[in-house]
Length: 236
Image 1 (cartoon, rainbow, N blue to C red):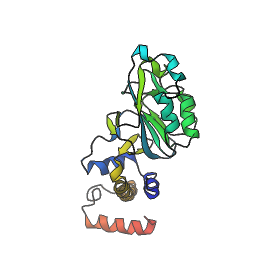
Image 2 (tube, one colour; image 1 turned 120 degrees about the horizontal axis):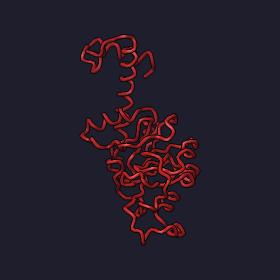
Image 3 (tube, rainbow, N blue to C red; image 1 turned 45 degrees about the vertical axis):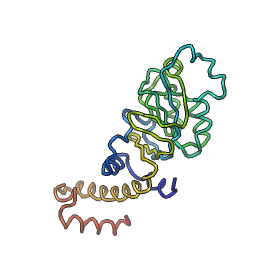
Image 4 (cartoon, helix red, strand yellow; image 1 turned 30 degrees about the vertical axis):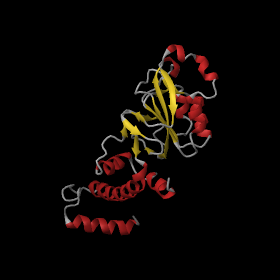
């Protein structure tokens, strides 16, 4: 990822990014029903590295599958690149955990940017204390083996109804997680920075008591003039 793009995406909200994507006809890029375990962290930004689960077939998914060093879940944790986000397709099923505290800690120590699942994490209170970006649907104590079978890594997946392709740009904030197609990440980031500047201006004026009519959107010439002056005064 372009370092300048990463820096820009650290400063914008998933809501603003959703609007920028919607302008391009992309309506389903927000991962549904996932929440940060620690909403006080800075934005999570990184390229997607994926792990896909399927419904477990019991005779192929006993606990001793973890003895295999090539098990897809273990390989995903050890192969997810530094600065990337591990995105897990758990079929929107949080009845069994996608991963737990030890694996998430390993991701953190390897320098990844975060982890997202549309299922749940076990050891979620411990994960919340790590200071590491982690998003899930809800806490889930049972091991993933009871319902999920890890089947493949770094392939296209669905996560919370959003399509995720390896290398897509993942951004998470206190509200949730958005998926930006890799080929438009630079332009989306640049547009979102501009949108954020205008929205900050509007918020300031609304707090001062100003009507949104003619301001948001800026259909009045005075609003555009005021925004230009605000940008110059605030270095935005």
